[in-house]
Length: 292
Image 1 (cartoon, rainbow, N blue to C red):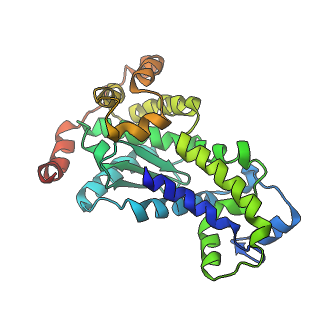
Image 2 (image 1 turned 135 degrees about the horizontal axis):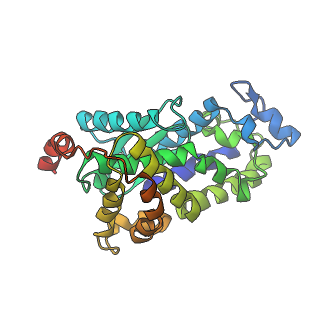
């Protein structure tokens, strides 16, 4: 999808001059000049993680904006924040929204940013199914899957300013380019790793772990755990050749594989008599469905 290509573009901007650039208490230029490698999780605090998520989300929404229906966005935020409060990281400044796109997908960024496409939302049948989709993405954040992916592979030797592309973009817009050559090779490494992450998706193991934790999370929040299965069955029922599923199936195991894998976790939570909240979901989306 085009918006993921734009997300990659934010990392291309990091070839600009960074000498003297400070973000919070981190002197990025000094770290680069000293060759200090700081992909240590202990040096990435919550503020920095949120900055990364904000940067990615801002670019994402610049290409595929939030859906204009305020009520629907508020509703998704309500469901998402309730789930987040029951997660292992309730203290994050969580943000949820609906991306105006026919694609069937959902997206998470570090720091508590979670989005579902309107195409995905319109396929669901209940609030519990919505909770299943959001719980999966919340679990990617709480398990730090994107951060860990950025810290591995080709990015292992990259430095902290990769996290702060918005500040680098500002620096680039000022016209400062005296050390562009010095950082060109580094920027190429960052871009290559980002392409691998956003084009190929997270590891298969990460997706399965997000399913396991997501199922437990929605059950803990009081939703019917079987809705996790039905949300995947919604995807399973759509032809795999449908263009709306192209990116989802490129970056995730098939819905059938995920349903099979999640069965053992379902046994753990099947005693939960959770709610589906079909009526509330349908009432909230009725206007949107009538206009689409």
